[in-house]
Amino acid sequence: MSAAVTTAPGTDQLPEPLLGLLRRSVERALARHGSEPAEVSVYVTDDGEVQELNRQYRGIDAPTDVLSFPMDDKPEPGEPWLLGDVVISLPRARSQAEAFGHDLDRELCYLAVHGTLHLLGYDDEEPQAAQAMAAEAEAVMAELGITR
Image (tube, rainbow, N blue to C red; front, top):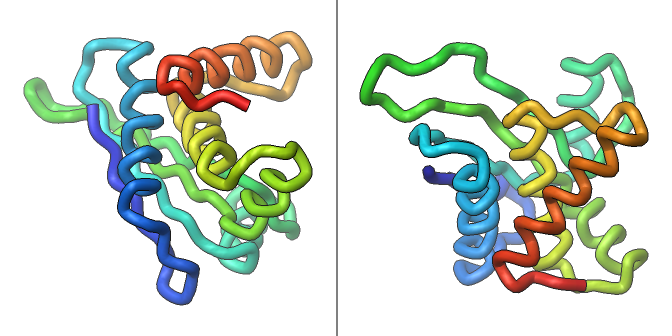
């Protein structure tokens, strides 16, 4: 299980300890859902880029906090599964952290886990499914010792 975390040019660079925590968050979510080697890419950017992706791929012309883009192809035997990409809006993460009363590190990790869970097949469109997804995300966060 592995995760690559990058930030967009022009976006505030995240400190290495936070990048490591984001990688561990995604890897923990992956580890809870199977032994198959998998890779997820996490990209932290600004509202403008997230809005453009949201418009282009979801038909919604507005920024959002996190987007997930699954890869459809299963890997060749012995190769890691390139599960997909998670794109996070840093400005949204900052404002949500403030609104929820916790730090930016927690919010970014939660969004990375949330996006990874979407790649793993979780959905949050229906209330019951959203509850299950939130509970799983909180379980991952608790295993990492990242609490509210």
